[in-house]
Length: 143
Length: 143
Length: 143
Length: 143
Image (tube, rainbow over all chains, first blue to last red; front, side, top):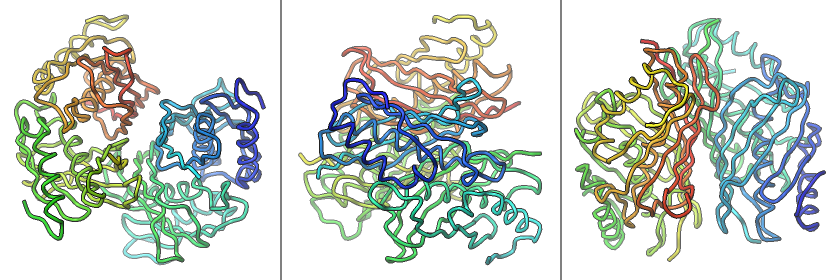
């Protein structure tokens, strides 16, 4: 897990949250990068998660880029906040035909209540082709 | 599988497409209704697909309501067409705290090239609470 | 201005807010209905607001259905709150070829911080054809 | 009107289409840049197009960035095609408090049938603050 200029407490919190998501363990997804305002998750093609044409299901890509956006937002929030996705829009540019993928989430505009994020999923093989783009809105929940 | 006024060939095609999606078998999802312009899929909470607070991951609900929209669109398309989701937007109204869910997809406006769909996911327990709404755009692919 | 079961203070506030939007006066738009969780605005085709094919510009329809959603949300908010659109998605089903239109906004799920709304624009001539659908997210601002 | 590497016929077609949109003349909007895959439109604050707090109405910004996306897509389409927006999503990051704005549209992924675009609106005063982001889907219509 690379990271830059992010305090240890936040990294620990994000890693711990990640490890609690059973979907990620089921998929074999790994948090690959966290830095202020950005997070990335790598994940493989998985035979148990395909759609009808044999590609990785679009729902898998959107779940992971949504989560990458959420962790990106968490890096800029006060400690002890939770992040709640209230909506996202995903565009499907190409089928997920590769073997390995990386979802990247970034904060476009941070805020005390609302975090605007954008994300994308690329295939790591095949020239890092862009397969999904996302815009997501997160609400900061003070606990 | 209930259905109304839909020819046997289309039902067979949709069922066959459904059965090829390994994600649905992995989840335990079932096609519960198909009629002209509408499709529904039931699915259970699954311990392998949770997010960090122990609820069913939002990506699961969106994958299934996207697919319900796609099958709804297929019911109104010529035989031998494929349906491709080019984008969707999902709103997350409540966490998926229940045990059973139903995703429903409907065609808002059919077309030869573009199908506009809307969808929702409800919890089957707890008063059929609405947890996700979606608007999705499908492209009809002639083969 | 029809209305049902909405207190006089809220109606006055919404009407006053409406009258302060110079865009609406410029367009000739009128608030046609306000009731708890719903608002409607009527507006005519206007020669000064057309797109390149001679239809009313899509931006006009989206501006008005966004505002209808905002007023719908205001009906369910505490007095003295302001409503801020943080995002919307609009689908364009048909060109706005008619002479009169009605934008309708409804609250899908109210909340203390977030209001989820859906909206649509219909042509009042030509069988009330649906031309635009919208899903919008509003943030409640306490003043 | 700046431009780079775009043939004269396409520039003429886009300029001509722009000049037919009465909304743009009404607003005082100008096409400020066209190059392959990108278009920009400048527009001023206009007293006739304000919302209730005295800022330029969000519908104006979305109309113009939608059009910028459409012209960006036109630069990559065959001659004699028309471009139809089927949906867009807009995020509202800040109120449009400035005097001059620029909407920029870019093609994220071109296609024969579908063009995926992204856009943004910046205030030209006040540090070029980003006020709106958009993702839009265009359908190429062969005439």
